[in-house]
Image 1: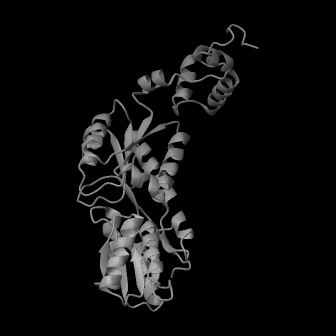
Image 2 (image 1 turned 135 degrees about the horizontal axis):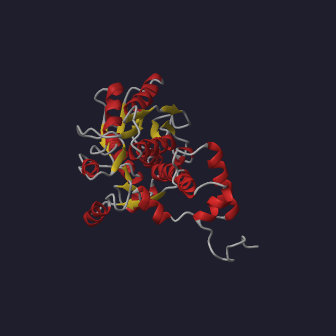
Image 3 (image 1 turned 180 degrees about the vertical axis):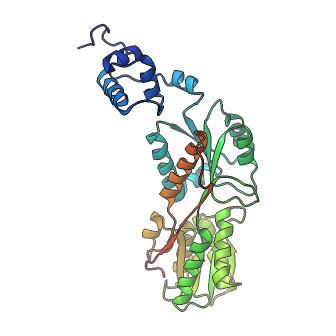
Length: 336
């Protein structure tokens, strides 16, 4: 049955919510817009009235009043092919999306690698379209984070900047994780340890290689781009150059999977002849043959922390830290 004074099929109004809750129209507006200047009793009454009437706020009007778009851009600087192939992206995007939905915000996913994609996103990322931006997989000394902050678009990036820029970021302890992986191999008696390093224009690739050198010294190095095929090609190069290797640390699980494939094709037993350790502790690690020993990085927590930092910046809250580095740990499986 329709509410008295309201025709069937018509959406309830703010005034009707206020009447049902026994409060003023302004109180309802403050509750809807998330203001803290409302008593607990009044807030509960308004929320009950909203639920009973099925009231849905006018998002456009709400955003205009608050000078917000209620939209957050998540920008990934990779090809679509790599984005959908690597487990890291799916896990962190899900974590970020959940965090934003819990705050009533919508996520705008943008994948940009080609020059025309880059130009389009640079034109879009303004305060007229988004309240803030989360940046994944930046390469080199990309000027975009500084540009966005200059436009008043709050920005948080995944990964420590490779240059000297001061910015807000969340990262895993890539260097420490690599040290732990190589230290474990050394403790197991491996003496000729090589690495398949990631891209050296990206913070994780750089830090994981530095961590390898911390423990292994000037051990053999081949480079990949975090993909399985690049890991396979790098493993082949390492074997051709150093056939007496007894261990390999790969800077990602996908590259480690490629390395395991090459070892199997060449009849080299893992871990008996060559042990292999990856990085990420992704779903890939549990499905290789043998299962992959890997450095676990808390990807879901990284996404949560990125959202927390960004929303604090947008709301003008003081930030106790703008650089967050989360711990990693080694997960031992059959490959080492």
